[in-house]
Image (cartoon, rainbow, N blue to C red; front, side, top):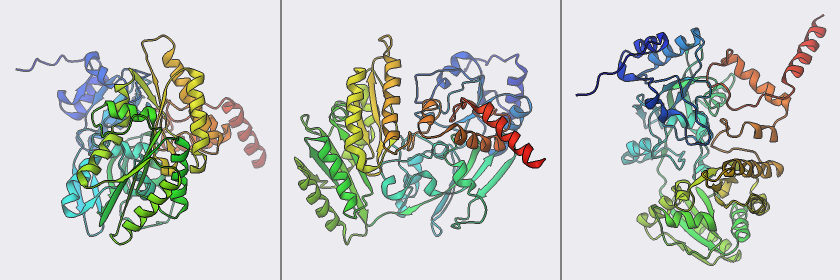
Length: 488
């Protein structure tokens, strides 16, 4: 028999429990809240006030309205796999967990779309429709456990976004609970270039600061007729990097074009899915092409020629689906695999022009030497989305701070060559100050002004995404004075 749950004397806890109608749908004891003090970014931890588990949109709206009316900070959370601290309750928030809203609501094969609740697991959608010849393209490495609602919040990418785009390219409609509890719908019919503002684009990637998504209409794709996958080994990172640019320059757009350096290879070979990568190489490329059967072989032959021209040591084509699956399992567990060679790691998420790959990777090597920390590089080379993994030991005083500084330096290196500070993991709290690498105070204010339209009291996921501009007050005062002078 389960122990009787101890009631809270906090009136807000009682009222939140009444909304979800079940004592098992709310957590408020410290020992229960510990699991919610961080997401995948674990260098900061803060306890929420409570965690509530609504079962439908109406309950989400009621919870949001209650929090808004009572000035309680709140935020939404999915599976907690985010890597930038976007779901960390900095202000003792009420966490509205969407994991019980996990249904596949409908599938429309004729119009190639599906409707899911936000807690629906990414990979489960493909598994649910694969027998009918369809799949869902966005494939973050955590797709076996991350939710589509979380993917919308972060505009998640994945290995195959080079050819197929990131989450925003596959969202057709959203149902959203605004920070005042109002429920709105946008899109959903799949009509391209609908009139009016692109609210779908605005909400996707807003990191849970504008509203809480409660229903998602996504684009699904027909399985390609054929696909082939290549592994290519190089004894110089520069050769592998140049091969990436050469493949794209040749007019070939692979479905995926991934790269790992020597330290990353050491990690994945020591972890759960080793595939026998040589230990003495400096880089490996994982390249996949797909599409109609006619032409696939020609693309593969061209890729092999490019790799040979760039001094490839060995290149091989997957002989069957089993081998291809093993190669991808090895790559997709790359982040977690770093635990096999380091007690702790910090993953970064910069983006650069492909042509700058050799230059930036050299800078990252110098950053590694400067801070005395190993940095493994696993990244979506085809679209220039880098993931430097800074390896450190949090038990050693000062190493966590050094890791954060090294990670920031890697992002600065990306911004300095015309890139940016995130491609798919989001800003959260991790990269707030690094937003200054790519935006001026005036540009930050313009974006926070948009947030204030949706979230005027800043109760929803406050303290995320944007820094407080150093001259915010002065700039806003000057703007108001200019507006007043123009009116007068």
